Image 1 (spheres, one colour):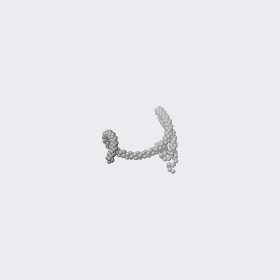
Image 2 (tube, one colour):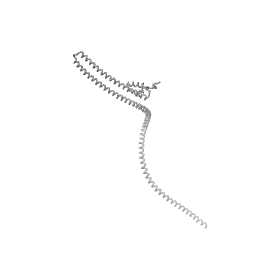
Image 3 (cartoon, helix red, strand yellow):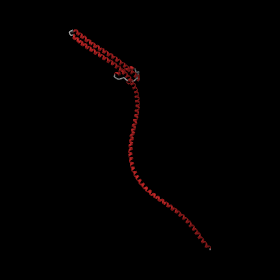
Length: 303
């Protein structure tokens, strides 16, 4: 069976958390999942919470142990000062026994030693009181730290849950980003293709620009030709206008001639009719003349 398929137990997670904590590394769900590479996120969250509760209990036990150690130190310090005072008192008594001559001096010295001992006792009491106050302040600080630790643990759990949600969102964003990168790559390829097409278009545009310049020159030449043609047209138009004037005069003359021709034709027609009538009359007269001549010729023969 592979390691990935083995069931995760609390002792493994707690042992690894202790090792990381000793190395100064804060254990977290992501680090543990990366190291074990098995188990679910909820399992690591519950194991971490249990381990941190145990650490909090250990901290409370350490605080109590520290309090007992401080108390023992204070008691040992008091006993040491008492032993020192007792030793000094014994030494002083022995000296009094050895020399009665210096009893007064020794008594004076004993008084001084007693005063010094009293001062030392007062100093010890004051120091003991200060240590007791410090111990009380330390206990209060320990309670405050414990509350802060519990608050930090709650906040850490909330942040880890929030981080897990953010991790899922980041994975979704990364997936979307990968899709966007694919789209970007496609767009980049399209951009390169369009860039090549644009280069070809620019080249064609340059060629068209050259052709356009040639066309402009041609148009300029044609414009000059057009201007000369316009001048010729204007000149021809003037000539045409003059010809039209002459034509109008000729048309008027032609109309007058046509009227005259019509009158002449009418007169000619009347002349022809008159000529035909005269010819007819001449013919009749000729016939009468012939008939008369034939009649005159016939009368002599009868005689």
